Image (tube, rainbow, N blue to C red):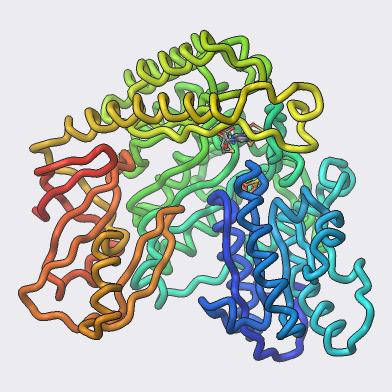
Length: 550
Ligand code: SAH
Ligand code: SF4
Ligand code: F3S
């Protein structure tokens, strides 16, 4: 079922220009895409220049203090501008809005609206209210310009309603086959909202609310429409994707219509649906299998983020047997010390994590793994830290994100544990981990020298984009635009005027998520974006392969 209009949408035509900047994870990137579709459908136009915008929106992240600091500085900037242009509307949406709540409005009076990630379907209405308030020069009625889940996000009675409204937002996603001709060939599809794990350091269960698994039919429907619109690669999103589990047989209400969820309308002619474990449950393995099987034109299927606990061999078997599922797993481990893992409430041990890695290597010898670590968690000793270094070295990740522990108000670690590792020490531990990982990443990439890899082409490389921007400034090229693909700042050229013998450096990713660059004649570069090509690897860097098109 696909609907194209949200009941909260206003019928007023609008000519307002919107600037939207996105911070944080892929969930936020997807939310921003849905917001753009929703607002464009109502006639709003988007601009890349915040100074030209009538409405400035920041889709924010709260995961670390640093992420919030960036947004506070943006709010200050827009606040100064609002002194000359008071009609500019400033909205904070996403996880920071939910975490900071009305306190943010008190400290930053220049903010006109707040919308948490669980309330994004209400954004058009909030903007509408804020615009009307501004036009009427009324004192702000906060209840009309603030939508936060607050404590409601974890109450079961409101859960079903929230599920329906948000489900509608995902289902109302706009599919534009023309856009799919170029960069929009890679898409995110949400499978799980929220998180129930409550790792002691983490804000996500508080900002995104309770874990909800989307019905498999809805996911399939969305994937199918994306593929029909020309999408080549789909990345399934969830905080802990492998915990995906949909119990069939529950009634789900979507916009007042009760829909029986007695399995899906299975057309296979068997009594028992082969995509459920027991006739009642769709597991993550079954979901992957079903997408792979039912969408043969989908060339790449990926997923993030995996949780180290309960990652069964059933998923690894499906990955092994389905060639179009990418050989890539991002499985954050956070620490190599069992004592710290317990304090983090992660629910697994180092030994269990190692067992998982060994199973991956056995089932998928060509898979690449990535991970996250937190250094300087409360009470982390040198010994705990060395255990993390050891685990990182043993695991041979293709890359790793290493974060300095950031105490987040409202989390159990913030309330109960003293942030007792100095900033200097956190920085030192961070650098040790990163340099250790750089050596491993270099070796992993080096092992591909002389081989041929399959690459999904995302755009021109950032080096190329910089070169082209410089040339554009000097007047020798057309304009350059910047775009983001899966969190990487990838830059793309618009209508360059280049001669036939010039080459440009393109960038893409292998099935194992290794960034790969190669040169092509300038005249063919546009047509390669979104294609899957073969590249012979001739060189490498710590975080990239270089080669020639085969
Ligand atoms: N759901 C994913 C992670 C989501 S948050 C998982 O459980 O693996 C992304 C990463 O941010 C985490 O893996 C963790 O390494 C980091 N992170 C989260 N909260 C943090 C905090 N308070 N301080 C430092 N890093 C944090
Ligand atoms: Fe945060 Fe843990 Fe949930 Fe990941 S699993 S989002 S780290 S609470
Ligand atoms: Fe940040 Fe929220 Fe994602 S806190 S990491 S934007 S879920």
